[in-house]
Image 1 (tube, one colour):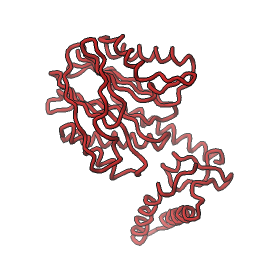
Image 2 (spheres, rainbow, N blue to C red):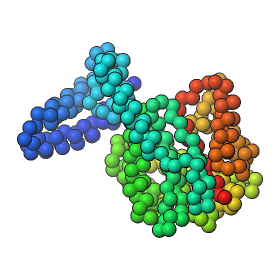
Image 3 (cartoon, rainbow, N blue to C red):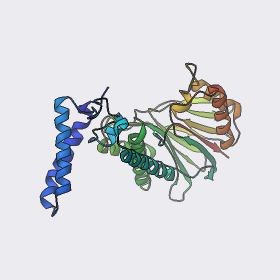
Image 4 (cartoon, one colour):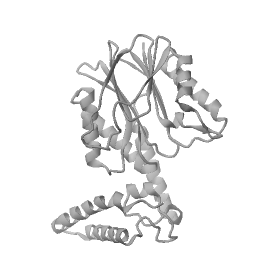
Length: 325
């Protein structure tokens, strides 16, 4: 099904207003005039019911490409060779930028051992993974794992947007609830209403104090005293409602305790119609704790590989383990 014009019409109308405002100030407005004509053309196609339809083959244009560029008029299969090469270059650049945004892996700081595994299903990923030292004395660890709506380039752009938002806000040293609330405000103000993100955001200090906020994401798994406990969502995904409030779960990590975060690329991985499932992840955590974070992640990945028996993965996959030393 082609993307609904209702998803993108407000964005196009805003672009049109901005172009109309800036054109009189330009000495050489030819490019701005061309863009304005492109926007007018897209709005007319919306009104006529042809928006999202390829002008060459009359098939559907890929939704993720329309979300990135609402002016696209041709589907991937109808692009010329030069256009395909240009798109491949863009994807390669996006993948390199995304890789550069990833935090240091196998990190030891603030009394914790932190490792993650980040693997995209395609050239770019819609998962968000971050680890930041915070606090006036850099004695607290902020960690985030999330999953944005959509696929492909549009999802990777939203991941970059989330990364920029959190890194801009973390310098203010907000309490966790306020940090997530402000990030939600930024997302609501700056992206389409069709876009949102589930994520877990946590702060752990050198004394073992743990604060955790789960915004509509899969449960985290806390391994403590031989028990693997599920820590469920405490709020709705970011980007859905401007006035959303987020509850913070307070806990404590003892020496040897481990917190595991993961995306649905692992729990929803399928073999012959059966999902790997959260319970298998939970059992894997129980069986391999209190091993170091890297060893725990490798053990879970090995169990997933054995379960899949060569079946292809269909989604991005991210795991993060935070282990108290």
